[in-house]
Length: 274
Image 1 (cartoon, rainbow, N blue to C red):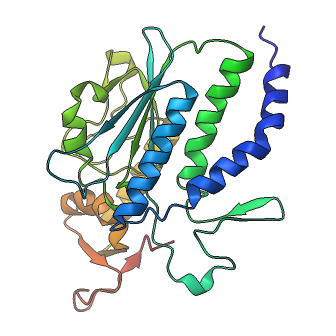
Image 2: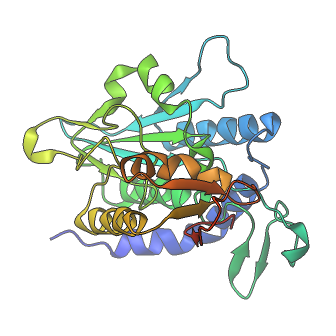
């Protein structure tokens, strides 16, 4: 049995430096429409994956410089491949007056880091990188390949993700996947094409996709709830997540702040800007 004492000690020794990395990453204002912030975050995570030892490919859409790139980083060896689905964009930080400290000036208070992106998803992406770093430094080579797929439009519906993946068709194939969220944006084709039938990642790609039993249950609950609603009120950022389910259920999608709630309808809010 592998002794992970050295790994635990490595993690403890590197936590201060890693916290500093998260602080640096969270300084980027990687919101929709902020080209400098998005591209700055993409360049930062590309460099970090390279320092990890990953082979990095920054995928762009030809002739569309305003589309945030897809950062692909692969590390490890062997026939088995695990996709780690992540993103470097963040939800809008408004209203700013609700923040104790500015959202893009990370602050540590009571042992916690406060910044936009510290959770969802910069604070989930970096620990996966750190985990690989610690494992390789103390245990040895990874037992499989790990491929990071880090996009820049997840919070806004992943509108160009399908086209970016089309630039590298092989990215859709993997033996397993680590999801970034419970509910992922619906796209026309399955996001993951399993390498073998017993490793299928897809429940119903025409609605939503999931990779674990818990995720499937959560997705089913969302769909079932929508079936009971005359209207669904969501934020603009997550509208695309629900459009296909709503269409199949013949339900209205109502965007927060809009004046298109049908007369006589008492809408149910299922999402709002965080």
